[in-house]
Length: 224
Ligand SMILES: CC(C)(COP(=O)(O)OP(=O)(O)OC[C@H]1O[C@@H](n2cnc3c(N)ncnc32)[C@H](O)[C@@H]1OP(=O)(O)O)[C@@H](O)C(=O)NCCC(=O)NCCS
Image 1 (tube, rainbow, N blue to C red):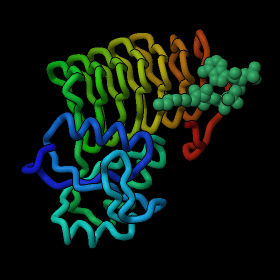
Image 2 (image 1 turned 90 degrees about the vertical axis):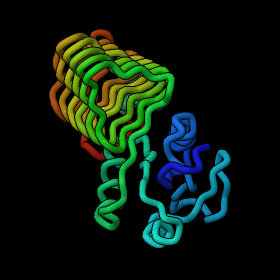
Image 3 (image 1 turned 135 degrees about the vertical axis):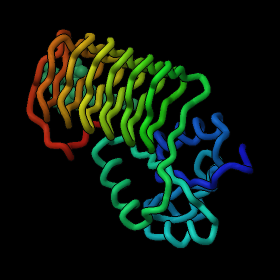
């Protein structure tokens, strides 16, 4: 573990937080001080990391421990945005850290927003732009000149062609395939294993081969 880098905490203590902690530790740029989780007892140890307290304890914990960065490890795209906004309203100087596993590939001209994680084995190909608070999951691939808007996610093993555009908070699930040049609207869930060959409108659940819109969806509807 890096003991000289910026001191940071992870918000969350679940399965997603576990993977993010691993990425942060392998990357070695930050000093991970502990976890913040309002549903855990302070002092509990999860996957080798100590729970320091809940969200309400964060201002005091940051002051006392010189913590200057945070990663919000909440898998649900909508909740990740809400929780991040709430934390930054309270602590506007806290940095949202970005972390990339050493086994991931980033092509030339790739831009990553703050609060984004690139998981092991992911490929982000030349000229792609990934916004704030995004999740590029294990072994997924975003091909050249594609865009992932803020708080969107690419599930494990999901693959896009070039020039794909995924709008805000949309989740592309496990193993989905997206044809080149496709735009997927905001607040959508593209189901596991789908093959997306036409543009998808905002606010829907869509799945299948070929991928079809199945029903409308509210932005705060859970999908995990
Ligand atoms: C799309 C999704 C949200 C389900 O949507 P839903 O409308 O709530 O669908 P339900 O679970 O009620 O299933 C309704 C029907 O659709 C089918 N279905 C659900 N997802 C499907 C998919 N991806 N492909 C094909 N059929 C699917 C179900 O088998 C069911 O069929 P039935 O009526 O014949 O029994 C879910 O399948 C999904 O993909 N979730 C995301 C999982 C994910 O991202 N995991 C990553 C973890 S890292």
